[in-house]
Image (cartoon, rainbow over all chains, first blue to last red; front, side, top):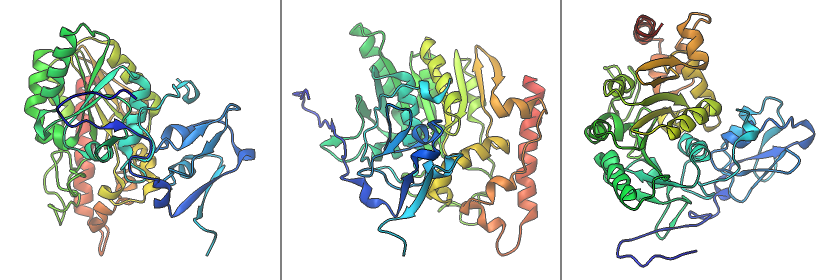
Length: 90
Length: 301
């Protein structure tokens, strides 16, 4: 990346500027590919850009940065995404 | 426009400092999909200044200038003038401020920039509180809502920023909501194609500020439109057009939902339901929205 020689303070773009935000998660989204109708509502509504579009039109979830808000599961009309407690059911 | 046709490019990088379920990053993603990478952004003190994360890193993949609370539009005017002198005419200048920085603190700078006819887009993401500093009341907070400075509920009604902006007779102003990506995307594309000052306001339901669970952000935005608490419209050269559900409500093709449907999910209104239902204040809220729509019908139908 190009660095600028300026007097003022300047920040540079970095993925994971606040670390691996996946550790904030309490509930984990689980994606069921068989139920997916490729509407991509989860992708557009994900506040974190943690849902990746795949070549076949479905999606995959980036667990490294997903904060586990559950918007994808709430907005999925066919319930292809469900929320599960992190580390198995207790 | 179908969701699958939206550009894939992301300008908000993962691992930023936003709360889970944040409507601001959700809106920013859609905004940058519409505006593209050739954008310079001016951000005053607001949640977005925090979402940028800590020095020496930032989670925004475009140039951003941070500026004082009241100076978003003034800063954008300066950036626009500098770009114009360098001959970079196709770069979009975007001022992105919260409702505190627009309704209350930044209104004089905004009014000045609109009056000067600066070629920029001003977006206010409206979460109806000063959420960055810890949920204080703002000019956009609705009647009876709890904030840390209005503990028993706000006693005044929110002001109509859309009408104040329309009084400047700018080429384009609009109101939209994060829950309607196609509406938001279309309005931004339109704003980008017009020369002169443009103003957009995005309804952004804030989970920690409004006290609802974080997976309901989109649902709350949709409810705000369906109950009539928020209207989707655009004003192009002084001609106001209502869009989507708001158009149907305006033309009385559908009945707007009761405001209770929206406020019962929000903890900031819980004192209206517990320990006893405060029907008087709920009715006042309802009447205020009825009055609002009557006025819209008189002016724009």
